Length: 245
Image (tube, rainbow, N blue to C red; front, side, top):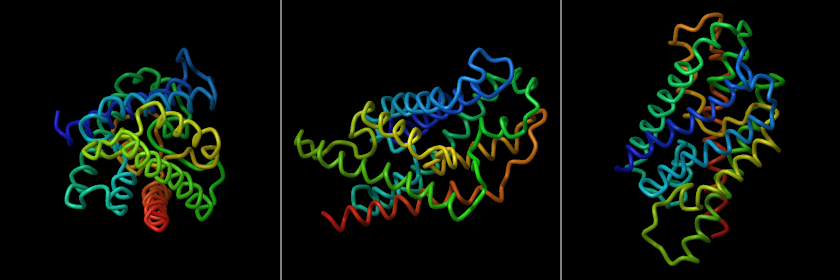
């Protein structure tokens, strides 16, 4: 499996399981209906664990354009490869979102809550205050990328593996899963913690395209927040990492 294939498959599985747990909790008639926020955050952490386990040995497991950009700014990833990595992540996220819809399609038909349906694809704020929503997504992604950069550096130094694939996978799948779970539990309540442009944009596009009963709007006026704020957060994390280096 090459790097781009690994990013595609890892991101696809991550979105399938991550958005899948949201669908299990919020759609009508599922066994997990009303499971609550703890189920969602734990499910997302395990989804990241699975995606990183798959992609880590081959691509380093970025699975996130913000991570790819942050690593490139920090000088740990080639700028020439960022575009194709991001395309692979977007395609993987779109495919994962499609599979969630296919898997739960009968439950989508039983659900009339348009907000719940959108939540199974993309994020939305609990309180719609765009400057604060932007800050929350930026800070959550800052924590993700800053910790990835520091633990990644320590892992390589301790193991003397300069040729290790750089990304979330260089931490190991379990530490990344715990990190994402911690972000979700502590910082996810305001915006749903996209912290990943591919995780939000590609599934939002699928929401707009797929023939979903009662789906309503895809809320494009909000979409710039989970797309741009994670890039800003990753950029700040990378620059601070370079400053302290």
